[in-house]
Image (cartoon, rainbow over all chains, first blue to last red; front, side):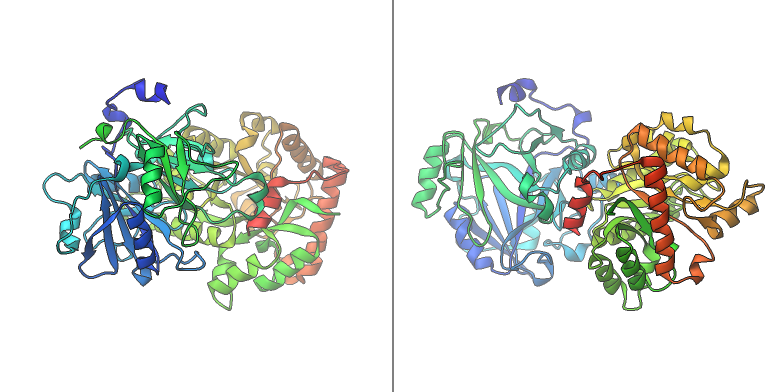
Length: 300
Length: 296
């Protein structure tokens, strides 16, 4: 992993045409928001605010925002059972959301109508993997998008610290057979992501192809089905979130104390490189990845 | 015989979609090229049309036809993007992975290469989240790409993984295109080949071309250019083309015959091609085809 991070500190303007600077939030959709809330709290997130008019809650720890959307109309149609939480969207911080939206739409991104979005603000969204969306959010300086749409839950700490320095490291996207080249094209052309060579690997789940964000602060991991699953491949979807932490084993210990269980099988078990939580609520898993760059390397 | 590499085209047969699908399946074909209008026009509604295709046991070769897409500006372009999205969604819903796009015949289209390439790239990008490939097809009446060579030039310059060519044998036979022109095409970029012949020795006028194209096509082996058609398929095979041959035969007579009789002619056409051109004693298991079947 070193040779990538040594590469260059500041991306050139041309390689980051939208001025992307990290993930603003990741959204889950579920008809059982309390159950997911309990799980998120075990992972160190705190409920911060509720949407003013919709069944949407905001959770936060450190630099990370997670939005839980249980608005019936927003639940995916292809997930069974419907209470299984799914990652329904992620939001990219960009220099100018409207300009970015115009650009990617001209290039062939699908515009998603406003009514199908968790936020009431006019946050542009496009079609991502499967039924998921990609939001484009203006970089915030003074005030945040949450100030308008959300009402703070009284007497909660609005900026709870992150357990073990957890931060968004990446999102794992399950794709169809032979679809890697398509998705690499999609993310590189529209957003300026860069595919990393096979020798660059993070964590303990080394499959698939890694795409690095143009701001170099997070990754997308594209995973095609195994050979024996090729013929019954599921719909493409965002499968799990990866959190970076500088000390995986210490963070595992902290999270285990909070009731999170980690996988310990012959193939997958927690190590200094990473760890994977046991699936809960159907299929929700979180991955920990050793990442020294951490918060210090993040813009903003 | 299992007919692996050949598909039927719903437009070749008369009658309701469900009956066509049954006839195609009964004749031993494993895949079908679907006309969007037949799904949308299903008497039970679009959802019933989609269900009929998905439950037919046939893999979907692709969906046809998006027309007059490229080279438009402003509102016309925005309108066509909406049409394209609708067809891509339909293709996805059918379990198909290919949309056939005919080069524009619109007199309003900008024929500048940059505009065409830009629009083809947009279309290819629109298709990616839906898992669909775009097969761009030159047509003789087009102002943007009049043949496969010209369409192939645009595909090459647009340079998108999921943008390739549909090659229609009729066009090559009608225009007497030299087969060596295919040498300039990367076989990986040929996403589907449509096969048909016609009964006349030659095409003398634009009116002839239109009539033969839309009304008097016949199956391979039944027409006046069997040797040329055999040479074309042999050439594609030699170049390394391993995709589908779709029997795309627009014929007024077939529109008045029971689908079972027409698919039997199609079957004979496949046998003729297998025996005279491809000489495939043992069909190679087609992994791609199996996968599509499993997905659909």
